[in-house]
Image (cartoon, rainbow, N blue to C red):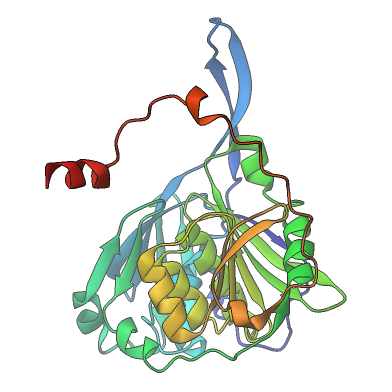
Length: 315
């Protein structure tokens, strides 16, 4: 995935031995347009990467491949497949074999049991949720923070400076770890990948490697706020989740239970708060746009009856 890091990582934290086998995120190609003419352009890369823990195959991820080591560590952390970073001895990527091998100091004793209870999620960028995570979510409660409307706008404005791969080639999602207060906002790290799950996992890996606490951070994604995205953010202890896309019912239920401020459809001066509205100060309310004049009812076109109308007519 493409990754831009704004803040310098913390030093003197444990890091396993890791390769540095990042690939370039986009590739130049020639396409034929509607006039039959050649057009040069860029497309996003996509590579299969199979993850092994102590020689046991875990999952195959589809990724841009820019930072595969970070992606792997974040995936392991979010899926709770290893107990801690210090248990990881090495992370080694081999693109010729399309694999990444993770070696631990002591083989994970309950790995087979963890792999039994997993659900493969569909949607944009396939993900995997392991059954035991549900038990851990029962224990997670995020700190109740207060934020301002002006902070949302300030951060959205800064986010627009990223999305480099998307602007060149499209076909990717972006996620960001952000910090914002009353006076300033900054994007700590911005990651793009073919799936929002990969981008979120890479950010988790970055936080894990650099011992970053999520309590004072916000998480931004271009993708939908599904249950899996809420789970990942909650496990990173981040209390605010922001998206330019929509929300699923399960995602909202989990956010309400755990205490994640859930803001969706966030673009320009528009946003919708689905959870945590009582924690937001509306200090930058935009001027209301005038509604278009209602047309004369006589000039309205006939519309097809709704399902409810048909049901009422048939009863």
